[in-house]
Length: 170
Ligand code: ATP
Ligand code: MG
Image (cartoon, rainbow, N blue to C red; front, top):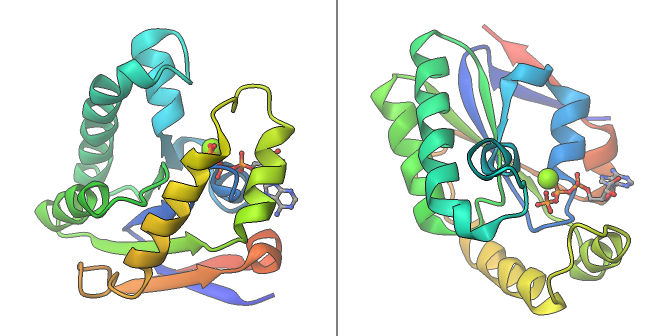
């Protein structure tokens, strides 16, 4: 397995389509409270982690939580698709405001794998077009992550996502 260096205090932004394995990767590589997830925030504001109508409030909460944690000097992982440039821009700005380095970890898995995984997930009952759209947004953004302000960019394929280890560097 590769070692993926991340600064000891950083904002780790996971990037990947639904079904790419973000939550699984976060659970394996980071401590529970280190990960702030958009689904968790939807649940907290709307009693339902899949409630898309709660997206605005859920992300308000997510950004607030991330800001509080960074102010306290805690490494924080954002578990959301982050395939849209604007979503990443807000997180890079938040990291800057707190003098913390933003790191992108991209889970770049084949579309058919993400689709197949989501078919087994009753709570992911949206159509295939959703993942296809996310996938094309992701591909468009991949090359420009450094320019967006991410100091470190790690891109993982499906096997690396299950194996690589995160190493914190002072
Ligand atoms: P979403 O954006 O919808 O929350 P996600 O990117 O968080 O999706 P996960 O929930 O982590 O995706 O994974 C989707 C499914 O794929 C789960 O059923 C999970 O068990 C499986 N999975 C994730 N990563 C792996 C892996 N490395 N090997 C095998 N199965 C995996
Ligand atoms: Mg998830």
